[in-house]
Length: 429
Image 1 (tube, rainbow, N blue to C red):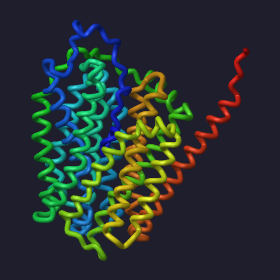
Image 2 (image 1 turned 135 degrees about the vertical axis):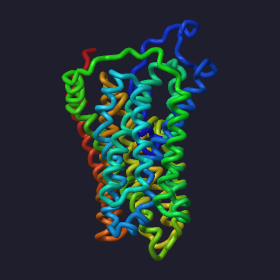
Image 3 (image 1 turned 90 degrees about the horizontal axis):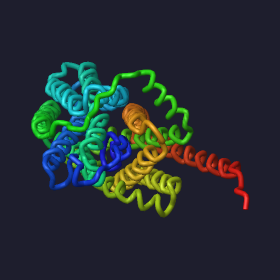
């Protein structure tokens, strides 16, 4: 998610644009030019559909638990299966888009995902619901794997940041609005109607996306060469810095996935006993993350990458501890700090991946997304299991351990940097 989104990270460097010719002869899209507005709106709608579907059950877990008679740890699999499916398939989907085209893969991904979304309200059991959600997440992997590549190929380099920003905005709006809409709809008509409404919204977004998105003009199909792909992946995984960044992204998302999977249970129970609609509206706190992610660049400029990660981890930990208070305003303030710290840390780590990878940036970005969504799945299941065994304090304990992991990895990175600096030869004068 992008730094400002609830899902896959999208970075400008995920696919390196070809060298830019003179603007007078460059046939790629630019603001104000033919097709640019259609393209931007199409990808915005794709982002809305993707993340509204991906997290459509997260705000509804207490209702799902109640209907099927299962604990939070079992209901949380409706979130973990979707994010886990995306994590497992984002790398293969990135390879398919190289062969069959970005628009083709994105269209097929959305078609399958919205089709499954229309079946989700009719799931007869928790097991069937989890399976459907896993298939839906795997299908959605085609969007983050292809959208950035499409933009890099079809949009002029100077307009690329703006274009990706609009796609990221769609991610954020979809992730937030999907949770808010389901909360209020479910309060009146139940969780099945709520996810059905999200499915219908996604159908409309997917249809408009396919009608609006201009046909690619600069895509050159490549061959599916598993040996080359595996070699690139092995090279990235052999890089100690990239491994640390992947782990940091996963750990931050472990905190975030656990907190927002379980928070609905906490707020619908005593002493708060909030209605489902209000609980869904809690996800408006995501707007704080959009702001914190946008300031991450300035934090790195002032504190350095590791300093920014320490600050993000500290802010997240402070929010976790504050959320233990039996006071709704303090719990909300804790969520604000958790959200701000998570998005800032995610922004720093994801942007560092593209700067660190000297080749195969698409695969480096896909690996980060895989780690990120694995963290989401782990956080959802482990956080819910901890809540079942020890209440909210158990979930907070899992989050604090994950933040300590971030700090430890960052400290190891600092130590490795000092050792490397001492080994560098002093230039002769």
